[in-house]
Amino acid sequence: MEEQQSVVEVRDLVQKFFLKPVLNGVSLRLSPGECMGIFGLRGSGKTSLLHILAGVDRFTSGTVEVLGCNISKSQRFKQAIGLVTQEPSLFQDLSVLENLDFIAALKNVRQDGIERVTAQLELKDYLRHQVTALDFGLYQRLSLACALLNSPRLLIIDELIKDIDLYSRHLIIKQLKPFLQSGGACICGFSNMEMADIFDQVGWLENGQLEILAPLQAHEKWNNLVNSYKKPGDPEND
Amino acid sequence: MTNLNLKIMRRELCYMWRDRGLRNILMFGPLLGLLLFLAIYNAQNIKDIPTAIVDLDRSSSSREISEKICNAENLKVVTYPTSYQELEGQIQRGEIIVGVVIPENFARDVALHRHTQVLLIIDASNTAYATNASTAVLGVTRTISAEAGIKTLMSKGMDPAQAKDTYLAVDFKEEGWFNPTLNYVYFLVLAMALNFWQQCCTIAASINVIGETGVKSWLQIRAIGFSKFRLFFNKSLIHIMVFMAMIIPVYIIAFGVFKLPLACGFGPMLFFTLLFAIALHSLGTLMSSAANNAMDSTRFGMMVALPSFVLSGYTWPIEAMPGFLQPVVWIFPQTWFFQGFNYLTFKNPGWDFMASYFWALIIIALVCYSLATLITAWMER
Image: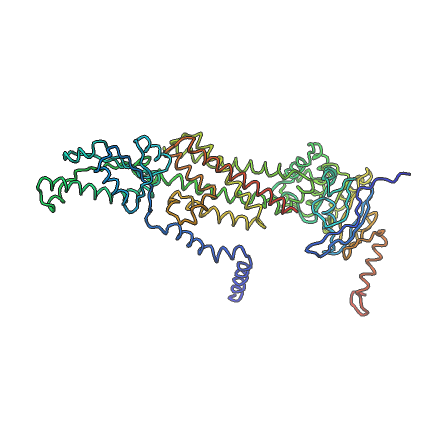
């Protein structure tokens, strides 16, 4: 059987900041319908990796292909991706509706696209609100809505459901399922191992290297890591 | 409580010190301002005021007058037009500030002790220049006039001391052109309003690029892959439209209600202002492309916008500024605009002369926008 074309194909990716390698020979592959979590502690390079995949940051060396497009040579792939950043990156001076409208215009999406994502992420009651006044859960719902406006084939998400209310978390995860079932792929940065179960595979990013694990293996590795710091008699052992 | 206050003050002092841009402005800003304005206003009198003499008599007496004017302390005779019309054109183009017209039969009238009149024309469109020119001219004309009168009386046998106190045989008629009453309202009010406007515009334009690339929403633009040229073109367009929307009511009130002089008409003035708004915006855009953050960019904008009016030579002639400063001031669009504005409002010297002012603003805009594009592209890498 012919191998399915990958959505993301990264080979020997190196990213250096002031000569210090942040990503040091990272390789990964993501197929349609797959959801990969990139796990790493603060400063491990998750955001760098995701921004490179989104074509936001340049990289030092290696090959990155997104939707069959070498991202060093072409930006065509950007028409078919959606990005949710870790830090709030919507237009702070605009309202919810104005953000949706403006980003839809930038993405060349029609009005019905706005109505679709507004319904999907239950934003109808907040359209007139300023984004600066939204609580974090709602803000992330809006961020995802903006990312989904152009019906992307690849969603790149950085810490989407960290520290948000349970309803928003439920709603966001609910939206990811049909997205993946329809052939979309998702790569998502996270730093809380409790979330590992929602991914098909987990990329463990440490010291610039990426190790691909099953969610169960990731849990095990995490527990081993936590336990390695424990000493007999520590209060947390109880 | 006192301790707490001290801690707050110490923290604020640390902040002010560690913010390099703010520290430099606070430490060196007033000093630089002092040095700059000292340099500009160092010449207490305006020297070498460009002067033209039209000698329609070409006699030894008229040559004597010419010579005295040539030797006058602050006047510099740069040209000898052959006709009044030629002189008129030179004044209109700002090539000369003082014009002297010695009439035909001047020598004969003096010899016959007839009353004769030498015409003195002073370009009064720049009040500071006109006041200095007037003082310089008066010094010469009084001497010439008195000498001529004394000679006349002495030839009639009068005692020299007595003759000195008597009438003046040669009359110098002084005419101030374009703003004959040296009205400061005509000269300064709109210019000051325009200065305020250009400062606001420069500061607003100075966050054009960094106001976009320096905030997190820039990630959205980059991730979408939206054309940066298209984005900044549209942003710039609306900036310039707002700048013009700010100034049009000012023009309507100044020219329509207060009837300030406008020799060139509303259309050319508006077009010239539009080009200036574009040039100003390009300068702000250039600063914003090179700045690390919006705060620094606004500071750059302030540092350019605040002294630019004084440097423009509108209130104090560029020719009276130190030599090293004279070529530098022409880098700023404000200089071209305020100089051109003076010509257009008071003189309207025609397209042939004004074309260079219009083109200068266009060239400044092209250079600044091109540099801003290159810097932005380089920063993105």
